[in-house]
Structure formats: structure tokens, C-alpha cells
Length: 359
Image (cartoon, rainbow, N blue to C red; front, side):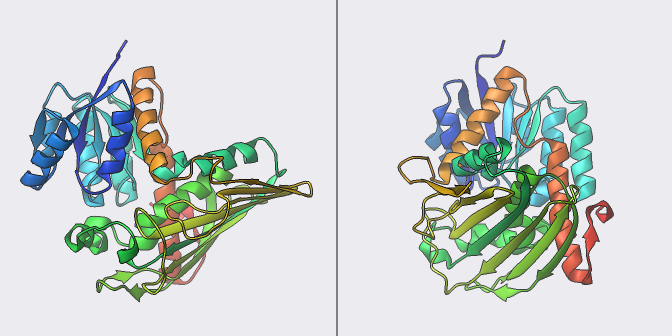
């Protein structure tokens, strides 16, 4: 039985710090190698994280027999080739969301994972955010009766109120060739669509209005946006409203973004009032059921966004050690991508789009 998982990190940007916290918190994980396309960054991060090896070519890292598993945290256009190469090299793979840029790439990853020795997952951190985990537990246990809908709202504010991130490290997210297009609806939106699917099941058809707004850096964000959908279960529906404004102060220790969620049922409601940031001074979790309101305060549940990364990495290591699947599997990862692409297609064409059209 494997007692230690030796980790190779591919892509050592700002978000990698949160991934590393999870590996460092797990007694069965050890970071042994780091790869980044910038040599100084690769060397510095390896020293910082205690890794014995550093590389600028990810294929050299994959050739290292000391690496059991890789965490791929790179621009989206690199996800498919890197994940496929890693799987073919016999590594376990955690791939930062989104799974890839299009359906063809996702299907190629799925095909590689089916014949691979190592496990594969798409990592989407909201799945591991404690208030959302508790909300899903309550929903599944019937606290608010039969689920009816989910309503999500998300805002992106001025960058100066959060992480200090160089402009050069963000530019690729606005380059369609590298990001796949859609900084808000596709890139950021993958989180929201993942939550919507996880709580109420697969979507069936989508209608969206997506506008464009330039930000303070001169890049164009695909928001404000309003996206509505029906689930395969005809009794259920959902919506997501996205807003981006450089005049908006979003208090955050991370990205200047925040999200809140309302899940409706036949007997009540569940509200999750924060996630990435600290926009609203409300309890993280509130439930109304059978005529009574219950609040879960800041001192009663772990609500810091970083916890979702820590717990997500711990689960990945545990899954490797235990020989099980860590969320999200490739089939669900592809379904989330179709969800996002259906919204974009709907807005472009001004019509309702069925997810089955996304091929």
C-alpha cells in the first residue's frame, strides 16, 4: 500500500500558493518537483516549497520517477496536452479547472484517463468550500424539502482591493487563444456552473444575455451577464447573474470577487452568503425551514476561501492513497464545460441552447 504521494507542481503562479498549503498540511504528501516556464520562478518556488527538483519543461518533470502525482495549474490551452502526457506517463493527475478549452480536448483527456494507471480529476475549489459543503448536506437530507431552484450572484470588483498580482500574470486570461475566451462566463463561470450542477443535477437547456465591459487594465470582461437554465429534471431551474465593476469595492484577501447562493425548496431556503471574498457582513450560512430561521455564524464554520484549496488537495492525496475518485471526475468536468459553452452560444445566437448541441 502506498504511504506517501510525491507531488510535482506544474505551473507555479499565485494560485499555486493555496494548493501547496493543502499538500503541506497532509502527512502523506511531499512536494518533490516544480515546473514553471520562467526559470527563476521555478527555482525560487522549489526552494520555497522544499522540492528537490525544478524544471522549465513539464515533460522533464514527467520523466522523473520520483513524481507520483502532478497538479497542473497552467493556462487553459495547455490543460489537454499536459494532462494527457501526464496520464500516459503513469502519473495521478489533478487538473485545475476548466477541464480544457472544448469538448474535443475533454474527450481526449477522458480517453487517456480510461487506459491510464493513475487517477484523474478536475479540481474546482468551490466543491470543497465548507459552507457550500454544509449547504449540500442540508439539501440532500431534506431540510428544505424537495429542491426547486438555485439562484447565484457573483461580482468582480477593482483589483486593487485584493491580491497584488502583476498585470503580466493576468493577461493570458483575456487572450482567447490561451484562455478559451470568456474571462467571466467560461473561466470564472466554471466555478458557478459546477456548483449549479452539483446541487441540482445536469442542466438541459440554457438562455443567456452576456454583455461586455472594459476594466481598469484595458481588458474586456464578458459581463454583466444573466444566465438562466432548466435542469433535466423539469421541476428544477436556476439562474446566475454576473456583475463586473471597477467602482465596486469587494473586500477580499484573494481575488476581488465574491459569490452568494440561494437554494429554494418546497419547505424553505438555504443561503450561502460569501465565498471568495468578504463582501457582505452576513452569516456565512442561513437556513429558513418550517417557519424558523437558523444562522451559522463566522465563529461556527470555517469560511475562508483558502480552506477550499487546502481541503481539495488533502482529498486528492487521500484519493491516491485510498484508490478512489476525488471530485470532479472527467465526465462531470466535461458536462460543466458544455454548460458554460451553451451559455456563450445562447448569447451569441440570441436563442435557447440545449446542452446536447455542444459537441
